[in-house]
View 1 (cartoon, rainbow, N blue to C red):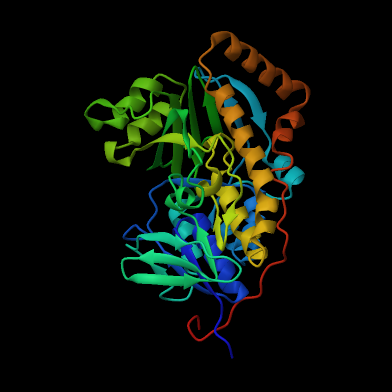
View 2: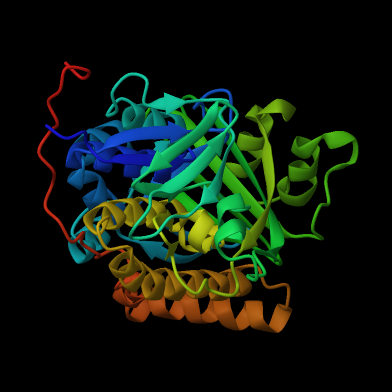
Length: 394
């Protein structure tokens, strides 16, 4: 019996691990190379829409994640003073898109994805570069500190500042600064009930959402020069300065935050689409292929989509590019447009925007959901894979 084809996944984040799990279920031998010393993610929570949950169904994980996640209830958009601009209806969204929107801690999703893989599949502290992308006649070659690996397929899921992207497309300009920075926190806030909300201010936004375990996930974004950081590195103090006088619950969340709880990252995106999502036997996915602002909540969702579509087309990477490049380009551009609208500092634009949102919420609330038509209602091209039964997984 011939040896199973070998796939090397560079990057052990959500997209890379989803691809690894799907490849394993398809019967390939998989090696995941993660440069960090562990799979413990640097991050907070992740919103999963019906499109990515259906993708997780392909690898048999969708129902488990739905059970472990907090289903997003009714909520809406608010002003810094607390006025509701518009309300969202969770049941209407689920009916329109064929399933709920859920919120899960990144660590939970990474843990469950990694559990789909045989022992020894994931190698941490493993820097990797593509030495040769290969072609139809020869395998790809991935170089590591421990030597070279030949692969029938290489999945490059190495993030926003992807080294593999630069190797495959050296003439591409890479990412650009999106014009704003973000903060994320996960904190306990016992005994406090609230509706999920996002608050839009002048050049700033704040979001607060409950997790299933009783903790609160909050995020903020603001226009800022690239690379700017809080004096003395105290990002909690910076959040207090920018958001401490906003409506109720936000001050309570900030009071529960410790300085070490705050994660801050500048946002970058791929403004010029890549010419392709692959070259030779190497395929890019997730942020490596199409980094986008988080304003649609689709960055991680699109990485999960990429993973299952890539495995469906793993024998024809040109088909993978044809399936993914137009879709992810359109979604990334929409995310950029939304970021410019909800982070605008122009008072006249803010007034017109808020009036339009309030009017739509009263006259035609379903119109608010239309912006996710064609995104959240996506379905994967394949049925769920059968579970792989082998000696190393029993």
